[in-house]
Image (cartoon, rainbow, N blue to C red; front, side, top):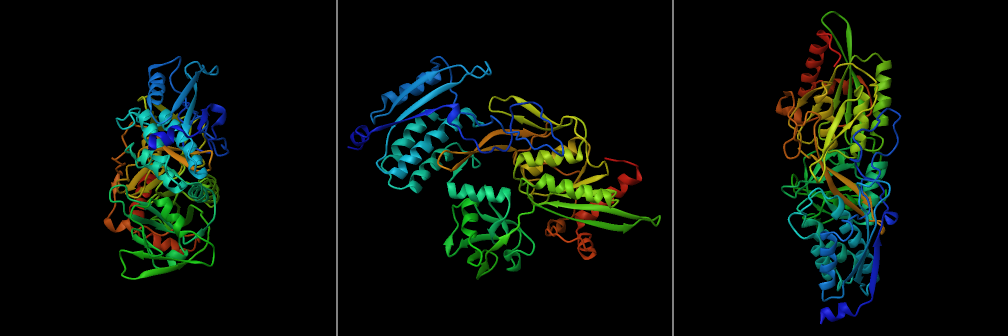
Length: 505
């Protein structure tokens, strides 16, 4: 009966072509082997990363197989392929693929059906694993469309897309709703209304963990700390929720409150929502007297996330510190979970000269493409130590690897998280967004990072895990409290060694 109902439904056709794609942003482009990075570099480097669906050519086996699968379906699927070669690049064979499918009678589900086709096509072209976790990706579209057809709500339909993506076996490839995507963009772009914490779901345990608290934020004042595990939000369990969904529940209008239950305390904590300024950077100057009586100045810069403003804010801070006579630097990337990969690359050029390789990307076909500087000019050549720990991930690891492997910095701390995969982010036609793992990366010295991490040159004592919280002021009390951090003490010692040797890197 279900097959007949499907077969009698009107068919909607979606042509998937380059003109219809609406990529909003992606985290890194692997199209070119080099791109210029400078302090004033503002152009997007992600062009053409996420392209339209381009499958086979001239009736290739893959195209024919897909068409045959749809023609054989007893539920009224139909497909037509019009194949053409992209004249801009003969090495890229483009196909305009039209997919016809039985339209759901529920309007909101029909909209998600179109989103399903969009997501399926983008995955087919760009996902890092060309075997799609050893499954027939064409058949997966058919299966998901059948499961979606009888549904009545958009939420349930999105759940089917999420299920399709989950079959890829990659927790970083996912779809988020239009509302969640707006929250994601706020987190990358500017201010938000919330409680002031960074959270993430641990891939292994599934626990929702606080990565860090913004100093002075409502969550900070309520006594929430880095490492706390959240089990309930407003009385509802967070089991199974990803970080973005949980973050959306924590956000809300200024003046309202949200109740959070932590594993570490028996009672729930009620937290007011306020306007949170998402500056990713805090800094101060640490002054101390040397044995020869001179006063040495060390610039301490903590970067908590790689947002769109990270590089410009760091450029301003380093320029100001240079004017104040700072002679060495500590860049603190501890508990920095990453963010925009482009921001990480832009930060790297502040510290590096010439045409150094920043990172090597490996695509789905195993091709390695180095991403390199082009005639870059560092703002400073003063000695540099980078602090890392197991909370340093993704873009933090790209930056740490670039500075370390190019001989620019010494790494101090603990082994990093080990997230060596890169996701593109594409806004779909309904306002939702698709995150796709499109490449993995290796350090400039070709060291594997994914699930391995980066080991520091020097490990510091365990108590250094209690890293100083972000701050904005630059008073002596703050600087003195930093010097009680054992990792910073180790970093200062290494900087003194470098300066005594007359080393500039």
